[in-house]
Each structure stands twice: as C-alpha cells, then as structure tokens.
Amino acid sequence: MRKTKINIKSIQTDVLVAGSGGAGFRSAIGAREKGAKVLLVSKGRLARCGATPMAGADLTCHGKGMRAAGFFGEPRDSEEKFFSDIVHQGCFLNDQRLTEIYVKDGPDRLKEMVEWGMRVNTSDERAVDAPGTVMVDAVYRQARRSGVETLEDVVILGLYTRENEVIGALGLDLKAGEFLRIQAKAVILATGGWHKAYSVVTGSRELTGDGVAMALRAGAELTDMEFITFACNVIYWPSSYRGSIFTYVLSLVVGGELKNSDGQLVYDQYDPWMIDYANKTEWNKSFISIISGKEINKGKALSHGGLRYIPGRKSFEEFDQLVQDSYKDWVFHCASFIDLREKMRNGEGIEVGPAAEYFEGGIAVNEDFAASLPGLYAAGECASSVFGANRVSAATMEMLVSGARAGWAAGEYAFSQPSWDIDPKQEDTLLQSILAPLFRESGEKPSVIRKELQRQSQKLMGPVRNESEMAEYLSFLDALKTAVIPHLATTLKDLPYNKEWIEAIDLANMVDTMQACCRASLFRKESRGVHYREDYPNVDNTNWLKEVVIQQANGNWRISTRPVNTYKLSPPSGTIPYMDFTKNMMRSHSDIGGHH
Image (cartoon, rainbow, N blue to C red; front, side, top):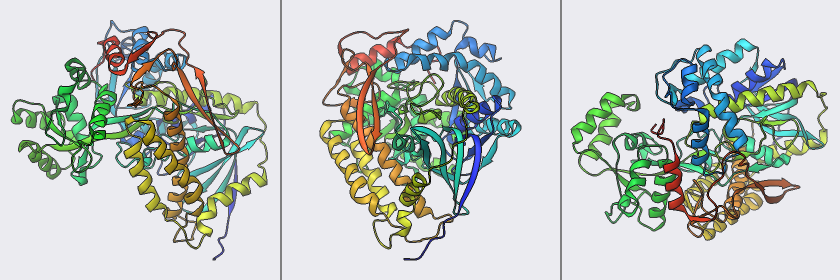
C-alpha cells in the first residue's frame, strides 16, 4: 500500500459556518452583527452550490408585512392568519414557537434583502418572487461587506467535541488535499437536505446530509426525520429530462390528468374538490404525490416507474401559447421544449412521478436555533420543526429567518466561551475513519453502492410507506453500515480533488441520515402530512401529537418522543381518516396567498 502524506492546517475563529446557501450566509452575517469573527466554508463554489441557487423562488410573508416592506400585500391579512395557515399546513406538528418566529421575523428579513440589492420580479398577496441566484448573491455581497471570512471547496468532515460541547470541526480543502483543524467557539450547520440519497430529486445532488449526519454522530438530537416532501408530476421519462419540474409547474397552471398503466384516470378515484384545490396550490406536493405513490405501489406504473401526465387544456394551441407567453423562463432550450410539446400534442403525454424535494426534519433546535449540544446551531433545511409534517410556505424565507437567529445566538455564545484545544485522540479516530477508503487496496466502489442506495430509497422510502417495505429498507441500510461502508475502497489514492473518495464520505453520511429517517418512519404509527403509511392510514391526534426524537450514543440508536408545542392552536381530538383530516386542513387554509 502506498503511503499517503497527511497535512493538517490549524485555523481559529469565533464562529464557524458550514454551508454557503442563503441560510449559511445569513447566519454568518448575523454572527458578524454581534461582533464575532466568522469563517464560512463552502463545499463547492461560493454562492453557487447547494439548494439556494437552484430555487425558482419566492419569499413568503403575511400581507401587512408585505406592505410594510413596500410591496403589494393583502390588507385583510395578518400575522395571526399566516401563522394559522402554516400550522394547518403542517398538520399541527409544528413547533409553534418557531412558526411564530418565522411569521414575525419575515417582514424584516424581506426588507433587508431588498436593501442588500435583491431584485424582485413579481409580488402577490403573500410573496415576492426572485431567482435563487439573486437571493444568494444579495446575502453573499452583504457577508463580504460585513467582513465574513470565506473558504470555498472545503468539506466539513466531522465535529470536535469536549464533554458533549462542540468546539470546532475537521475540514478538508478539496483542491489542495489538506486537512483543516478548525477551532471554533460555536459551529452553525447550514448544510441543507440529503437529496442525493434518492434517484429522482428536484434539489441539488450536492446535498448529502453532511450536517445532520455529523450532528447525529456527535450526539445531537434529530426530530421530524420521517417527513419528506416529494414534488409531484416530476418527469421520469424521457430520461434526458428526468428530474425536471417542467411538468410540475405546468400542472399547477393548466391542471391535467394522470393515467396509470391500465389507462385509468387516477384523479377519478378521489374527492374532486381536493384534486382541484391541490392542483392549484402547493398542497399538491403532499396530496398528489401520495395518491401517485399509492397507484405506483399497486403495480400500475408505466415502464419507467411513473404515471402518464396529460395537460388539462381544451385546446392544445391555448396550452402551447400559455407556455410560450408565461413560462418561457422554464424553457431553456427550444429543441427540448419542442420534443416535450410533441409528446403532449399527440396524446402520448409525459411519464411523471414523485421526486424528493424537501426534508422537514433535521437537527432539533430551540428558539435560538441552538441544537441539544452546547456550541452547535443549525439553520435552513437541516434544522427541524418550523413546518411540522408538511411544508407549503417558502423554505427560502425559513433560511433567512433561521439563519439570522442562529447567527445572533452563536455570535453571543462565542463571547462567553474560551477556545479549547482539540483532543488528539478524537482527531486521530476521525481521520482514520475518513482516510480508510484510501488505505484499502481493494473493496466496494462508492459509486456502485450509491446507485443502489438511491434505487432502494426511491422504491421503499417514497411518499407511501408500510412496515414490511421500511423493515426491508432498514435491513438494507444496516447491512450497508456494517458490511459495506467499512470496506469501501477508492481506485485513486491521492488526496487532492479525489471525487471518488468524497463520494465514499458522502455515502456514509447518507446512510446515517436515511437510517434516522427510516427508524422515525417505522416508529410513527399513523399518517400525517407527507408521512403516509398504508398500514396506519389515520391521523391519530390522541397518541401521535408528538415529535419523534432520534439520537445516537456510543453507536446505539435512541428513539423517544416529546410533546409538540401547541400553545396557540390545537387540532381536533381523536383519530381521523387521513383524507378527511387533510381535506379539513385544506379548507382551514386561508384563501389569501393560497395559490402559488
């Protein structure tokens, strides 16, 4: 075996931020606003990796807050109505303290984004629309003006702890192949979701659950891991468009039908009011994805695993003109659009299905977005509890609200803490684990195992679940953890920009994170929001109005529950069939800003 030279560079800072999306930059700005020295590290290019740049996005805010920020806003709207809508959308599993922060802080976050140069395209009763790149550029520029130090192409590999307190992190400079020993008085994780664990996704495949997995291994609590939003009507076939949300966007505007492999109309089996309402709002991500998943689970999928989408316009010419007039920004290549257009014109339709889009769960946080481990904070998609069991309001506003709060709290915390030395034994254990695939001469190839993980996740942990499939999936994950991950090997043994090695590291993070998702899903014996179980098809407000808490201690899993904070709004009591409960939540949703 060839020897690999290890270089470790030491860095000291007050606050370390992992992640360069909107949540990461807003966290860094917040910590600087408290006077802390801040280092932000990005896994890829600054302001161009992760979820935020890909967002075709809006910032949601109640009507009065919209007007205060200088935009059109529904004057009948209020904080109370917006709060109520988010709690109903979340099926009463939100931490209502965090939801209240989201609602109250939104107007200030919107105003400052405009002041920082965010260009707004359009606005409506409860939202302004701006591309994700414009949003992240605004906070990136402000971070630079604020004096935030940055490093790009650096991946965070693990957390340093001292007596269960987080005191820094081990990083890797991908280009140089040099390790970074980062001593920090506080660490903010803003690493996003874990989309790469699925084969069909709408988010960035750079997102591999790094922050959630590191927090879990360090002993932090996770919550709401069973709740995963799947966007509906995402292209499965033709393969060149797999994962495109083109058909999802069109279905929101022009409606349409889904047909199964028998040629049956899927929507005809369900309440027409729910179909109509869902297909005009982002309730479709839960409702339409679940009924699509049920049809697929019955064995009525087409040849590539999806259903056939037929646009719902009387005249194809009218539909065609609508796309060209109103949705030309979604048509990036004329030739590609012509190909899709012809498939819809001749009645063939497009094969579509659910795709992983957003993860409601993550690191458990309090009102300061502090984790259960002192010194650790989380912001954005890798933090949990704001949206409960279902997200309809904008995650882009979440990233700004949680980022600001996490940054302020971490900046203040850092001033009360000394800078602790890193335990050499802890660092050596972490390095040995990270370097192991390089040291093995032969073993499993990360890319092969990653593809199988994605296939099994899509098949067994989609929007519709049952105990036997999840038990099969958990056995698969446990086998990966014990018999495959310890035997991964890379072909190349160099440290600088070794993509195969990074894939091995990412794979270990995805397995840990999906184990937490599956265990929480098995534990919650009811259906609620985006968590639908065929074997438990009721919402049980008597026994399951609580969060599932996942934790690891010395490699052992701990699963417990904690009551949901319902200090403002409480759900109906008892056990209610899922479809009836969901319809009630839809009807309880205000008509203000409900159609996105």
